Amino acid sequence: MKKDPMVARVIEVLNDVLTAELTAVNQYFVHAEMCQNWGYDRLYHRIRMEAIDEMKHAESLIERVLFLGGIPNVQRLGKINIGETVPEQLKLDHAVEKDALVRL
Image 1 (tube, rainbow, N blue to C red):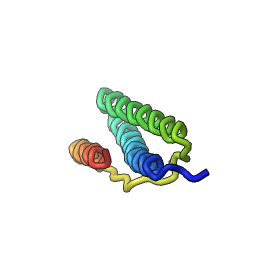
Image 2: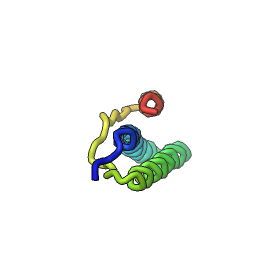
Image 3: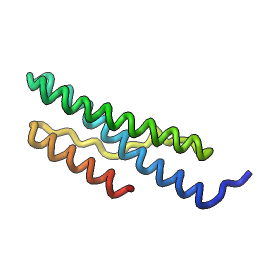
């Protein structure tokens, strides 16, 4: 049975947002681990919680795509930008959030 074009478009958009969320998860986890390695334990925990929140968002998107009869695209990621300093990491994490908002 052919999908309604509107439903297919919604699935496509949800998968685009899912890409942004999964990209953020990976970027945040790397940044969190780097902060822990540098001894910034409070920052490590904060960034790690952000990664977990993004993972929960991704889970919700996956559930919605499945509900609509689509297949979640978890293989596609955006460019993951890793900062070499904490200020650079925060700037890059802000940018990945802005990119996700554009997709909404």
